[in-house]
Each structure stands twice: as structure tokens, then as C-alpha cells.
Length: 119
Image (tube, rainbow, N blue to C red; front, side):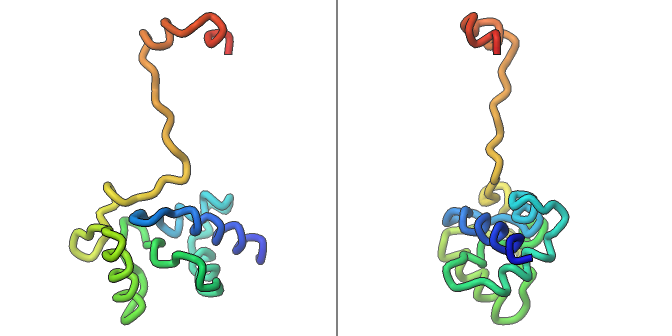
């Protein structure tokens, strides 16, 4: 369990300022798909050097209640994270752990060098 938590916290540390990721994103990136609840436990047991406020629920919802939820929102707004009502504007602030590859058109594939075509 300790190794799982370490892997999850390492992924949380990768989230840059002004971006957020969901609990499920963290679990998947750490190699434990479906373990979103364990991410919450890992954050609960973490030290102060983890940007816990950058982890939100599905769809950008802040799941913490009371003062903790208010603090999370204030920290995110301090990093210029925009909200739509009670949710983070995920289309602008969602952090992807796996960058998307650009798809090539048929013309681009045909114009590659002979060496590149062999790959």
C-alpha cells in the first residue's frame, strides 16, 4: 500500500500550477486504474509538499466540504484556475499525464523520408 501511495503522490506533484487533475486521472497515471478512492487516502496521509488542491473530482467538482473545500477553491483561484459555478473549467485547466500524439494526414505520411517509412 505504501508503494501505491508513493506512486500516486508522485503523480500529484507533476500537476503544474494553474492545472488540475481528477482522482481517477491520478490513479490511472500511477498505474492503478480504478483506485480513485485510494488517491484520496494517499493525499490524506501526505506531507505539506504535495499540491493537494490541484486534485478534484470527476467533472472538476471540489469534493471537500466546509473550510477545506473553500480553501481548495481559494488556492486554485490564486493560481488563475477559472470556475463555472461550482466546477473547475476543465476544458481550460485539465492536466493530461499522457500528451496526445498528432495524427498525420495521408499526404504527410506519403512525404516522409524513406528511412522514416521503414519504422
